Image (cartoon, rainbow, N blue to C red; front, side):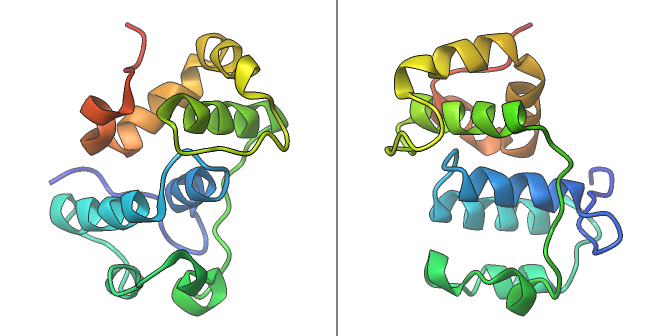
Length: 136
């Protein structure tokens, strides 16, 4: 089993990152569900709300206060958010150019390897299908 993740109200950095990846378009709703299954299967301790997550049928049912009991927090900068969106463009998940242009996405990915590394650590089951891996 792996180390404990930050998934609780007092420290929800890991949940907040995964949720941000969903909201900002780096992963699909189905991939968010796969992450929940991954946590259940690979971590000894996980909050009960993970059982609620895997029962959700679509994105619109994922209301943080109803499912988690709190709003998850991930401490990040605006650039971090843009890098997550860039990952979504690169993976073909994000389609709209609301905050960054698709043409700028490669620049964010190559200059902010910290977020890409965290993405790959959080979603290791996506590495083969993601089209890229963390720089060595």
